[in-house]
Image (cartoon, rainbow, N blue to C red):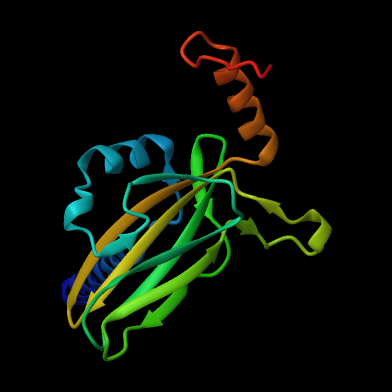
Length: 175
């Protein structure tokens, strides 16, 4: 009877440890704003494998951006987008996987539109998108991250008007 109890406990521990490893391998279901800020503080962009966008935080007025970089042939790159909802970043659509070809270069246009809605009229552009990149090379996994902030035309115009009215930017008059 004791052996049966010991076998059950060992079986339970094995299942629990395998489950924990499975969760550790995959990307997180969501990131808090604080976790993204910690990643921003720790990441060294110069050592990342993404060439464009170069900065950790990129501000854009387009609803899409080009992500490019270099890797080795047969590497697998997985791109996962997270949109900001309140104080968290939650997954936005399905991840995209790219197999790196013989040239070792990848380029992917990534849309900031949240297309999980059923109607195209309801599709919105994520104001803050956290991009998580996972590069698999054999048994090795490397991570790279970017934060993309979308600014629409109205916000850009408002910022320009603010700059024009400030004392820092001289205004010229045409006679």
